[in-house]
Amino acid sequence: MDHFQYVGLLAFCLLLTLPLEFVFEARVWRRPKRLARALTPAFVVFVLWDLWASASGTWDFDDRYTIGLRLPGGMAVEELAFFLVIPICALLTLESVRNVMAGRTRLHRARDRVAA
Amino acid sequence: MPIYPVLALIAAALVVGLELCVLRTGVFRRPAYWIAMVIVFAFMIPVDGWLTKLSAPIVIYRDADTSGWRPVWDILGEEFVYAFALVTLVIIAWERAAGADE
Image (cartoon, rainbow over all chains, first blue to last red; front, side):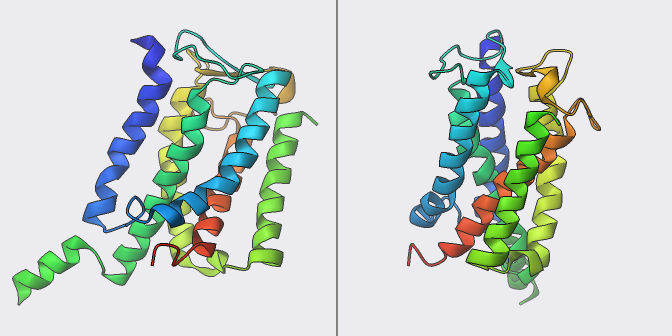
């Protein structure tokens, strides 16, 4: 199971933030074109950086905790998912904060229904 | 200076420059951005901490390439600068792409 530590951590991040999409109406997953445009520039830059840093030895990955698939130069394949998962979590957080501040969430509407 | 903190600082400066001089989405003036960043950094501690903890690291750094400064749960200081650059670049691009699905 240790080989799934990294990929499991990323899956956990996705699961933990998924409710934000619905409870706080973040609408990140449901705006796929905007999401793709938001993720692409950072994905390209940070993957290139990671390929180079892995190849040059600035960082390395422990084979015990990764599934063992490596890109040329030694970058763990999990890193590709990292640069999608972490940005999605951040965008879900941003949109949730906005909606909470503006009173635009499922919870606000439920409260309004109770009051009415 | 070791390479990783230098590159992280350059990346953060480039992202700030991109926002202030080119894309001008205005996120730095919005409280929601700063509140979201505080939350992201809070969750970064357990997540990045798990990845880089010195007791059983998933990601291992070459000491000579890092600052060696690990302020919280073995996380390198430059990781926070790196995270700021990554997350801010994504948020700026997200702002620019507003309306893409309408």
